[in-house]
Image 1 (cartoon, rainbow, N blue to C red):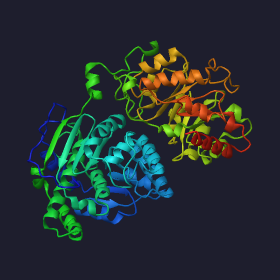
Image 2: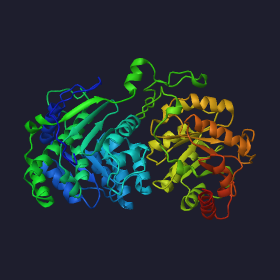
Image 3: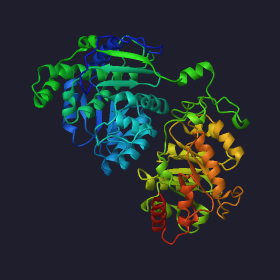
Length: 573
């Protein structure tokens, strides 16, 4: 949509069969535009300050009602009454991020569809981490340029600021994988837009290169997508028929492209194009979308539906000789089997946690903390640059563990990953309470990883302790995407965990990590008796990071100790 590439007019000429591939997409786009105009959806925009005015004008010209509400205390209640919500990360100031979190929590609770636009994800750490945090709240649609989608999927480094440095074709596979992992429709903007629900890949051609010269051209499209997704189902068709979110997203792109082409035809430059574009958004009607250049084909690779139909879900396998929990066994959102479950772990793609965030990993252990509040230790560690914290409360009642988890989540939100040791029940309770907890870490004696994965859902981080050859064999038999990292050790004997495995030393760790890496498995973090002075050995042995307990929890100045460990890790690179 960003540049016009003339093609033969065609409608859905799929290369392979897929649900939705052979549909009349131009006709569907026309239906959704008519439904959008009839509904005049109320679109809440938590968007960036640079594009607020243009975004509001685009929505008004198109037939929607914009509401720029992103203030904490208002964002949540408004999201519950809005037709749809846009969250755009272009200028993610502290207070706005707080309002965004409030809005998406309320949207998920109320069933309000919402769109995530991860502006400049990849090169900028704060917004990238925040975008990944927002994925936990089940966006209906994720819309971005190719570099942003690659970065969010964990397979790219991002673009040049807000501009893409990757092409749409290179991001299509990542978009499909991201859709399957999150359950969201994923849209990639470019000369030819790509929209996918993980099963079908739809391409929308057209638009104008002049859109790339108007500030907010892409950002306003995200708001329009929200409006289309938040509109009623086209008249005369049951809501369950087809994939309404996919259809609506495709329709928004087709409409935007048609308006851009009409505006460009009479424009003499960027200024006249911008005014003409707003006029065209008001003028283009359902009948004008009949000639939309839309094609569709099956997404590459097996979809979850394909696996379910063939009985290859992966959770049915007798891994660890413990059966999985049937799909639908919990009321949690998106707790179905993870996409890719039938694929060996060696073929795992994408990530929920950046391996760089594992470099200095704190196990905040209640017993080691003694009289010092865990919350104080966690706050100091985050101030010192620790990016991943595991909260370990072995002998603490569940209710007290939950209190610690919620309190620590307030400290780590948007700054570090917070994982809970062993207690899946406490994790679920914390998430239900709205706490920003990213996942759990389990051991070999806990629930089997594939069962835990189904309980915590496809977006949560899952760590696993493993050190023996038998542990490694079980790890590499797990379905793809089950485990995100492995805590391997004990490297040395340690008093902080009395039942630790037999120490394996750095040589043993190196052999274990090399075997897992050779099989394409998850990164390994060294744990057990490690601390200051171990960064070089850990790196040499192939560790993604090293996990410490006493080095921070027992330090006189936990923040300074954390900084020292990070400096040591970086110096050993």
